[in-house]
Length: 114
Ligand code: 5GP
Ligand code: ZN
Image 1 (tube, rainbow, N blue to C red):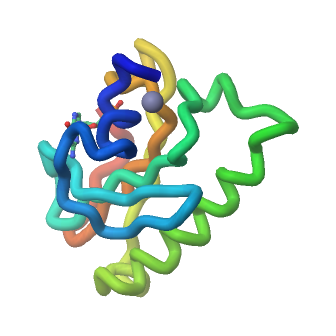
Image 2: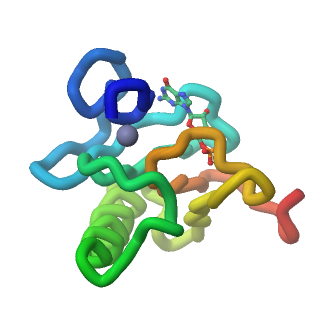
């Protein structure tokens, strides 16, 4: 998608601090961190949101969670705890229409969210 910020990060048009990359996914630091650890994990394929996950592409979600599990250990937050957030749509607070998972940790996270 030509006008998608995260597709531009995938193809190198926008620079970011890469945490992890393979043929299917990318992980990078959020530009506006809300916690000491705030990493975005995205599929390289453009999927707009959770609303566009279906029987043909759902395997990427489990794969992304396996990468999240690995990154949480690497960042030293696996045992203390962390939160995964995937905002969907306007009322869900989604601002970038490319599926992404926030990995938030390194502080006490409040509940319920705002
Ligand atoms: P959403 O609000 O859609 O759940 O999350 C989008 C996230 O992307 C926000 O936390 C925002 O700070 C982050 N973000 C937006 N543009 C960029 C960018 O160009 N680079 C990086 N690294 N993060 C971005
Ligand atoms: Zn995209």
